[in-house]
Image (tube, rainbow, N blue to C red; front, side, top):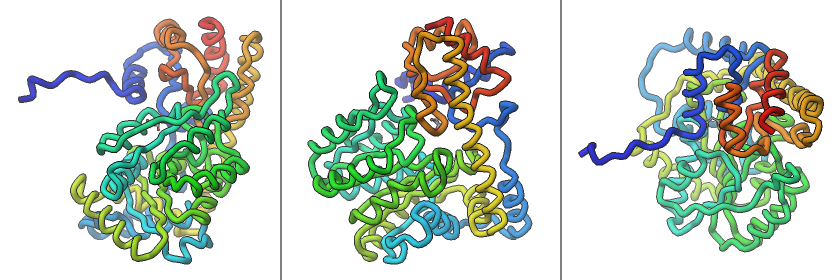
Length: 396
Ligand code: LMR
């Protein structure tokens, strides 16, 4: 039976991670997969995570099952963090949450729910978007389409084209938005743009599906959730997939959650029952360890304060690096304008190189980025910034 199977090409992001790891060159620079790195190029376990993990393990007396919806304390702590503790949708009991295996698992749970509720809906994803959005959201059988988002010439959102495209969509279609730190462009919607999008969603009857993989790594925990909180306050329905991979540094523990906002508590109950059935049929239950750590941090004032501080340090490092990258490229490749990098936020920006230039960087200079020339800004630092800028200048 399995002889008929074709070998597939490697994943564009995870495949690159494997090639980088296999490269023995000491000069190699990893700007591929989106993980935070500190000034020494390491991805350490956060101090708040270490303390919370010790507390969780000390208290744990059993490894028995939790539940298909996951860790209840985690789910409700995440509702407060994502929507804000005093948000009207929480007071009105209009939110239900299911823990997913990572933000990716949460995105898939949302797609499964949409397919059951509205199999004819099309899911619209920004062009460009995170490569894995396409299979996660459409392998359920939902149709997938793209809407224009980024003007590479300007290094900014093409907001006019985006709005024009959304104005054409039929009622009931789903539009995926990035809450902050747009992957791969780093070009985020401003508060004014979120406000302009709101009447389009209302008028056209579109379902927003917001991916929040980087809360706190853009401008701040509250600022990065602005669009979610606005849409939740004003629209009858909304889906949010949140990840704790980056902001808690819990990548391999696979911690994420799907929140669904509906207009009545009875509908929320029905949707949750569907989600529980979906989870049970896909993987039965999500892993608990990382979720228990996040619940511990968010439920303890001292640990939360320490995590908020560590998150601010990560964010400040990325934002500082953005300015340094612009200055260094300006010095070494003066004929090229990379100033847009300092106006964007989060881990990623697109350098605007061709696939041939990206390949040359990889094969001749051992500088690794995805084929669309997305760089993980956090992979840069004092130790490799000069070398990176010189390598880019050589392929330009
Ligand atoms: C990325 O975009 O590099 C990250 O979100 C990691 C991943 O799973 O692709």
